Length: 478
Image (cartoon, rainbow, N blue to C red):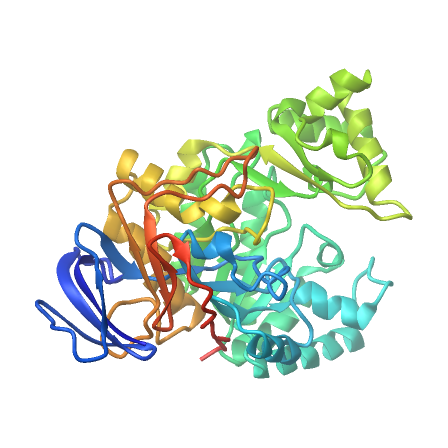
């Protein structure tokens, strides 16, 4: 398609102030930017007067790959302006990536997809069910071969989820050995670190150590300080990053804009000693109590879903720790079942500090139809709450941290800015009204104020309506 976007406030993604301009798109590429561009024969026109026109948002930590083949419109992502999702996170990637990428080409989707190589996936492939131990030297060598294979298929680097099985059983030396392979092939290391609660700073130091010894850039996934012992310590995190930078290391992070996380209930404690009541008591105390733990999914008893552990304890006549241990026993025992929790554990002062930091970009950590509002509302929330209402950062900086910063970090050289020759991934929204409406009770509620989304030159959202077009591309490491 060929088109001209007229009269919009073009915020080009570089951090420069917006300017009213027109944009000419030919095929999948931006061809011209200027004032009073007249449509050529065959070109359509989009009037963006009063709207912000920006590059498409690049979600640096996404779980959109889950169910994407069955839901190729990726509506919750498109409606918040995401044109590229970076998947393969938390150490979990599709294997082999070559098959996944071929599948995406066979069944086109609305948005662009790039992927990391998952450490947990590779570890599981080599160690199988016998993963609750350190890997041997020969096993690490086999993992290195598989990482190289996946990097050749276009992986962006190595991801880990060191708070989850099987990554939790690996030592730092194992991660360094695999990170070396990714780094030598031009990739980066991205990690859901071992502990985002009391031991967060220690976990960040481990990531920096991996970056230094593996000789590659590193990124902290969905950075957070999620328990009372580390609340208010964003400044210490910045000092760690700055000290690493002085040593020539390249450390960054991403963040989603909510004070609550979602994961398995087992990450409330640092070990797998689920029978020890004192560990659960400590875990609950550090996040403010059982009232802050909402059971968002639970296959054994759907009646419990949507209630906090405190509410379940009251209705069942059991204490909160007993309730948690029952949930764990019914979902992580011999008969596995699904469960997840949404835990209010972060402080707004830390979230604001992270959002404002120049080397921290934005993400959702969300899926297509998740039970956390981040999957449908992250970017509109940043633009509405933290830009317009609270003025934590200027609009131009928020756009930079949503577009050119992640594009540069992920090696997506032809995206992230509005400039001639760049791919035409574009979002058009009203900066005066854009905001999120998703909540924990209605986690997929659509945002307000975002009208148009263009992916590779093709409108996928027009006047707030999905077009049914699926122009998304597979993006491989440059």
